[in-house]
Image 1: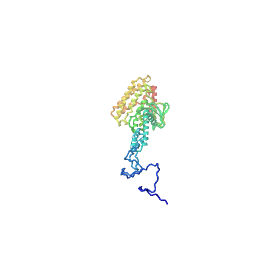
Image 2: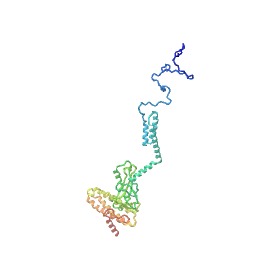
Image 3: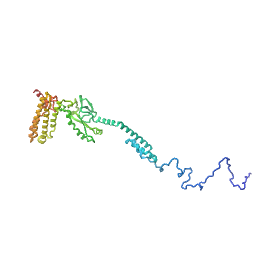
Image 4: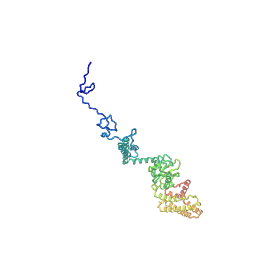
Length: 417
């Protein structure tokens, strides 16, 4: 049996077995007890086994921490970023989305919010819209486009024809006018423009107001077709007016048109008979005739003098004055030799009629009115003017049914004399 040697006296006792140490091993440091009183511990902080730096020590090398957000709460989206994106997509206010995006980006970085992508996209779209708007305004493209829009709408709803133009339309002249096409007046056509005028601006009035304003066309016809005897019996005055749609685009023009009242009727040749077509003698005669025609058209609504004697007497006075003016004009004009006699006879006839109409204007009762009125009206019958018209090479067929034969017979009698 073996016997282990005993410890030498005076040596401390140790374990029965000792692990040998390598000769070059560093000396082992003594482990410090966590409760060592030489290093004071934070009583409010538990020991960190992972060695996380103490927040009360040196600052983090990565900058200040982000704002604290409670667990489970989503990070809010910056409202300016959302507004920038919406404004940029709609392009309703170029430049506003760009401004909102520039406001949103610093706030997102500072507050830790979401919406950076929305702010960037909104700013880009708005900036592009602003650049495009500036380009359009500076190059005049907007004015060109607006003119094309207005012309396109007018092409389908209204017309842009000048005085003296003739045209055809896809639909009836008396209805909705679409597809108007200018055609030569020498051939068959549906309408001839004799005047245009512009309505006052402002808000669009109702359709009835526009139609009432267009009635002015009736008074403008005589300046274009001075000789109403030369107009076909089925020709009447029409007008083309702005619609509510074209009014909003600046359309204010009323177009006055001569057209046929016969179903499917057309015109052939121009009806223009004004100073650009007639000679000076014809114009002088027709102007004198218009003075009398205008007065005759002011007859009172009551058919009989006994129903409105004051109205009939006032009318007779207007006719008497017009007769004096017409006679004076006929006597003052230097007529050609071939027309002097018939024009002098007509002036004498007008003077006789003036005296009778003046007597009717001073009548005391209906019977006293009718005697001079009937005699004076007979002197103004259409056939009495045929000799003067023939001498001036004007139309010799009076307007109205049943009068043509009478006019031709009277002309033949005067020719025989």
